[in-house]
Length: 379
Image (cartoon, rainbow, N blue to C red; front, side):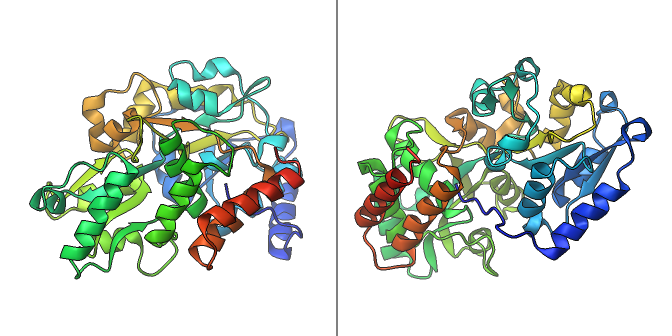
């Protein structure tokens, strides 16, 4: 996974940390626990049915595109400014060296694969709040009009995309992606491979990267024309995106039958990907007792999150409430990111960029990256 740990702390972030730490009262004077949250979750969490959580203030981290730097800074410095942080699942491992583990029994009732993805010595690294990861959103109307088979395998999806591109030149792109390139790469390769193997140079990995190269699957989420915008405007036939993004597109669809959602193409029928739902983490320097957090895994709170458009993490969740994204996730197994370390993640991202943005063949890019990983002892 892509990890960007600041080598030199920037002045604005350092000032923010110092101000937050200076304003933090001593333990005996602590009031409501302060929990850092992304902007899109502030009101959702603030008004949820979490009476058992006790007094809490949900503080939005802004600008959120710098949140990773701030979180690393706050965790690594053991600042008591925040009692907890809500972070994407793929970043939980990055903060692990400075995280206070939570009791593993708190995750009783959570999907076993999610619990396993967060497990560590002495407990779990975070409390999962929502379920999320990559799915495949495709134009059901195109598939029906052309009598195409379901995109269950990567080879089958490729054949369908080539047919669509030949018959529908009006499409700007037969397929687009709003996922980080490394997140999509691991998901496609693992789903083909049938397991979360960290080995980089293998046929499934080469095949997945070759597929991404052939269809120019670079992350469009930060561009003016995102993949979701291309889908809404009818200028793309397929979109790789998060389940939450797919929920939004389904809700805004001009016709209920326009889109279909499927798990990622997988040789065995079960997709594999990195867990990327929202997670509540406890910094090692926190003065807060996190025992009341368990209320966030209660049936009432998880049902509340589902009504707000987020997928529940409980194994007992009702599939009829979940809809097509929930169904896709039932055929998906979630994992922790491959433990390659910050340098290893950068090496993987470099290999992907060599193939997507440069002239390098996927085989060569991954072979060179595997050699660099071994040289740096990431294996």
